[in-house]
Length: 240
Image (cartoon, rainbow, N blue to C red; front, top):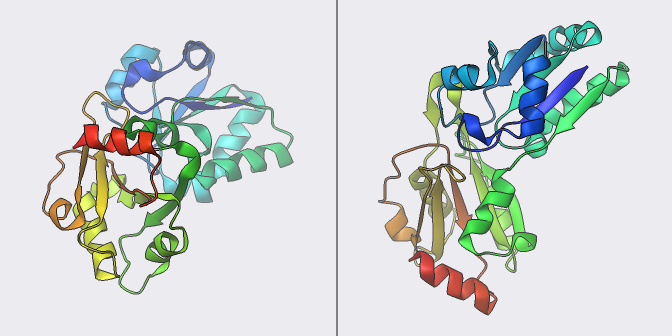
């Protein structure tokens, strides 16, 4: 059996009771550690879960997934995923592979960034999601998402490379968008460590947020629609 288990956004105690019970009975436990950043130490997870955790990097999940899948044919194997399961398409792909091979699977859901950004007071159903990669010199699509969806809030996921301790900052993301045409007076929201005890949310004009340094990662950027509901307007005033 292959268990895909969301472990939440903060620390070892974000795990659900169901997820914890399954982890403790599994023969092997992996932690996917390249699509997001863990906001606690792996040792903290091991102590709380009572299991040795094997880090699963991009190469293992995307190129050598048969190692995990073959183990799941004979044993109970858990793949822990920071946040929720289906935030990254790579997890969907792994699930599809397992189903094609007739390997039994079970999904244990948890909180994700998509739901946690509701703390801003912006309506979740109005969000569009885009991403900004590190190498973006000739890439226009993230800005085009903003231009083509004026009635939507845009959530930008910022590139990261945890194995090399490399994370895109809100500053870099705003600079990229301004360079491509974003009005420096536009109201934007920078976030770091959303869903954790160390979360930080700052709303300001783009020109000012470019110079603000968030202390922790991962970070994300929100460009609210200029067509706000009165409740959204009230919520953003409280963030200032």
